[in-house]
Amino acid sequence: MPWRLKRFVGQGELHFVTFSCYQRRPFLNLSGAKDLFVAILGEVREEFRFRLAGYVVMPEHVHLLFEEIATASPAKILQVLKQRLSRALRGGHWKLAAKWPQFWQRRYYDLNVHSEEKVREKLDYMRFNPVKRGLVQHPRDWKWSSFQFYESGVGPLSMDPWEKVEL
Image (cartoon, rainbow, N blue to C red; front, top):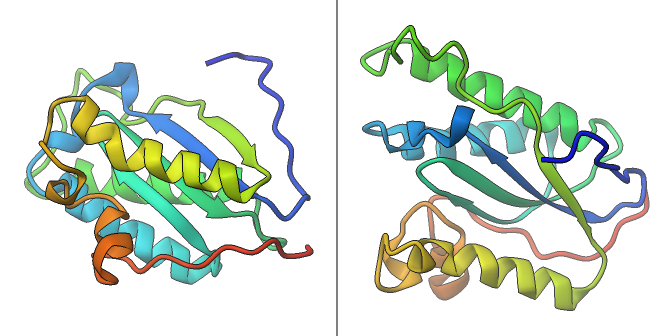
């Protein structure tokens, strides 16, 4: 990811973020890791009270589409989310090998989403990511994404309708 990536905050927009496991290792394929990520995402969302429009958890990376809030920057939200998951996975029966000193890549990609058209584009991108990668035949078969909620109204996490808010 570019070292001079510009981040634009304070606009009250959605942020489409992508972050990866260290060296793109499939750490999220560890037994139960994707379920744990979704649970921790729900906890962090409740704590910071941001609206979540979409997500997908892949074996080595994550995409989120979430609201910018006045009380915490997207960077702070991601820091808390990433730290909680890596700490949880370093303990218990997951115990990552000592040769991997970190769980996440340090940087993340962030794109401001300005329009309903872009919201749909990013939701579709997330929905079809597991299909494109050959992990499943249909988006409904990947349980670690917002697709199930949009298809049936139920899923591991409920999604929030999006309308721009003033910060």
